[in-house]
Image (cartoon, rainbow over all chains, first blue to last red; front, side, top):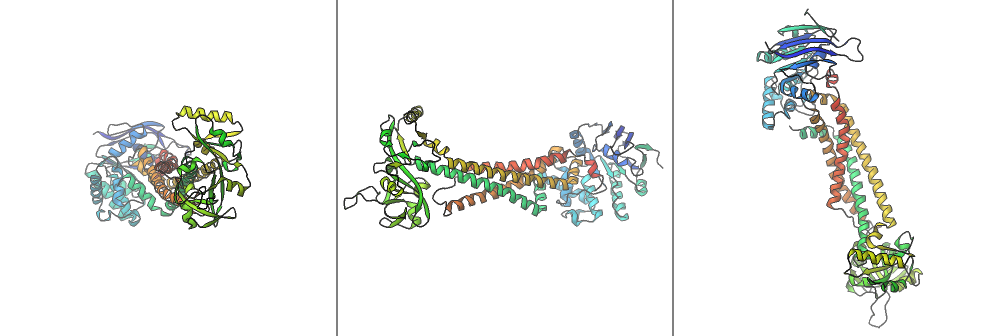
Length: 221
Length: 378
């Protein structure tokens, strides 16, 4: 099977850390796979995910996304806009924009037609069950609803790969299950999903799990 | 949703901060428009005052701080009139003094044969040089139309000048705000009232009409050579070098510059605070695939909209202030603000420049930040 993401020899050191956050990490994520990256705090799992999204500068190594190996920031921005959807532990919604405008935001510069952008944003919100809250500001939504808006935003440009960093970390059980269900549904529809999680329940919902310790992969527990 | 929409929503989301910064920009632009408009108005008033009566050259006492403190002999005019290229020359005495009840005006004293009378149209009564029915040369004063209106006087009335009641002999129309708000009297009367027998403040010169620019310059140089103890200036140069005007210009620029720099700092401060508070939002823009340029652009749009609104408000306020100042009793009649499209365009460009520079620095810094460090947790 072709790799959606291929990471080779990733090294990342942070000045305050004794050990590298990523220590010669290599990892392949197959197209259509749903992968969980687990590990204790400080093991480097989130750093690995950010490296796959091109959001940190690596000290060594390279990441290939769908056959492209971006190096410059601008190249990574293009890859993220076209192929990657990102979900974080915090929703990071823009507080001044409504739910649908937040979802529309990644499409600016990608889709020229404002009408099409709005249509797609509404469709993405509908997909996460929030069509009726489209015009609400984030402050008027619950934590679970905001995270679902963030997932809809990640889907805005129909990415081939969704990368999620502790997407259920701030949610109660019911909302966690709903979010995992959404990501599961995406994967069932063919989207490659990589989730960084502490939660064994979330990891269990994924097709494969890799475990990280001290910036390296270990066999899953 | 567009970049402009996002920028405007961010501004309206923090109404107090936006409003106060906008006021800071408006204040700076208002100061710039009002001060420059008024200074240009003063310059224009002076220039109009001379050029409207066909004066090409003004000869004053060398080294005099300004034209009103200059002293030259009245008899000099006849000598100047003999110079080749000079069509006419006349002694002139100018004074700023109170006319009527606390109305400060510029009064000019001319001899009866001064060429300046050609450019002044009498609209009621007569000049204070013509003989009256009794055949005597009547002393008196002619008032500019606007001054007469402000004083509510007509020919035959009397007004107090130099603490002496002068008969209003006529009302005249003339170009230029200072002339319209000024007054004319006989040079002899003015000399008598100011204890300057046989003196004038300047000799004003009208050159021949058909001279080329080079020939004009040659005549002016010739006058300067022939009268080395006098300052001989073309009208425009004299206005440019007018000390009080230069001081007004410098003050206008200093105050405007301080106001503009303060506004730039206010915008920089606001945008730095905004950017600092919104590091997460800026990071997410990058995370969803916005290139650095687009992130900077949305922040620049905020700065541009903020300062554009402030500039428009400032322009309106500046125009209003300039006209209010020009209509105040102590200034009325001396200055009509000169606020043209070019000045307004410069004010708008200045405002936008403040916004773009003030927004760019924090925006560029924020767009350089590593988004991962911010997005990993609030």
